[in-house]
Image (cartoon, rainbow, N blue to C red; front, side, top):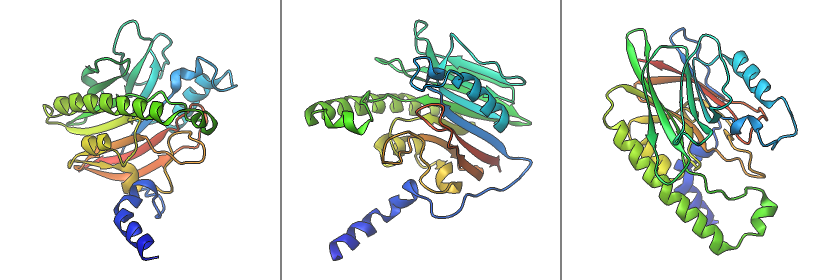
Length: 273
């Protein structure tokens, strides 16, 4: 009993990253900026889901929620979606790659670019948007995936050596990608929002490096429950994030139980001081 108590006390500071006991914070304010992040898995081009209307359903979902800033990962640049009254920027790592990231914004985009991650098809993009007199930098990241099948039965057939090699290789690539991101971010003086699919959890090294001392996790500030963002059997994994500069007040957070991808969309409401 004593040993169990010690373990619980040592891990107590991490409980908030996994589960929020309080109810969701939802402060209505006309100065709020709504930010959504969603890995759309290429709009189901390879029929992972039996539905033939996934792309249409995702567009309808976006129209219903009306995020002012929308960051999509695994977006098909060869089959783009059209959203009225949005500016947008999308890019992929290589011209031959059909998938990439996109940012849609209700606010004008005055600058944009892509972070080129080597030895991968993944990348990150950024935009600088103007809201009234404020310029805000928004990053949309898609970090390296391990490629390991997340089905429990499939995992049983993997050898521990093979899993160890795959995870080790993935974490090494993720670390290199985060270092490139941090170098790029260090040159920006604007207030920053970082979104995306990190392909890692809130307990990971790469999450801690991205978050640093200047960003807050909007789920930890205003979410509730497990905040599950990835469809992993029997375990509520949170690998998609919206992090905001400490100069923002987080007034809301929501995870949507929408089964149109292997990820679930998340949305935060933030207000610049």
